Image 1: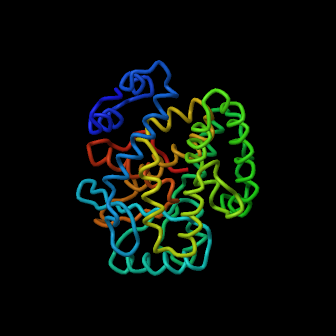
Image 2: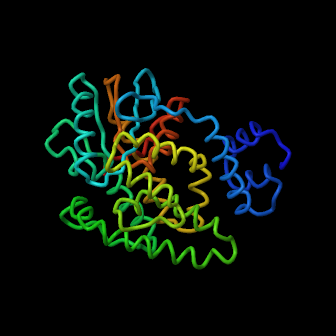
Length: 307
């Protein structure tokens, strides 16, 4: 596929249902080689076509219309800075003044909107912990404290340190086989956890670290951070299969939560024509992906339950 038209390559990546199919498109027997080659093709193609501005004015984000309801997904750093707090509160207040509904990734509401009673916190962290327990996965995290997710989030430095150790352990075992690209890719997948605190780096993804740090101090730069993740994540089925094969828990805690947040917002919204989701920037492309599936006819699973 080396001589294939770039547009054909992007179409093949978009439509691939799994890594084996991706390997066929790239004419390689290695799903790992296909994954990393697809990453490079995707990043270059999206970079060329990326708009410099967001779909939304003011607070950057991506808009997806589902059955006449406009869902706006806003990726943020949730670094707990005064600058980001002030910026987000100003925009969320304006959204709600005009009757919009606002949902937050779990942990963001108590950080920025605790005194905004109509701002809803989703159940994505709690769901992920429950899902890991149901699958009896060897866990890098302790069970959710009895005091709830807020207590867990208060200990995020310890949580992120644990995940960093787990990630680099995986990298140590895989790098001799797959090379430095393995380290960069896994660092990107785990970026939302590892860049919340400025003292933690993300593998080789210094661009993500720098953009996140900059945006936490100057939220006008959130659009640049969002575009970084848009061009560095493949479509969700591919990212999830690749990560699931290496660390099932990390896949649940990262990409699987994207689907949960999309499910939650669509399930809960009844009448609001304008809905805003405030999520970590690394989650934005995945949440958008699943909202687009709803736009294209997907329905909320019958087994969906609130945790």
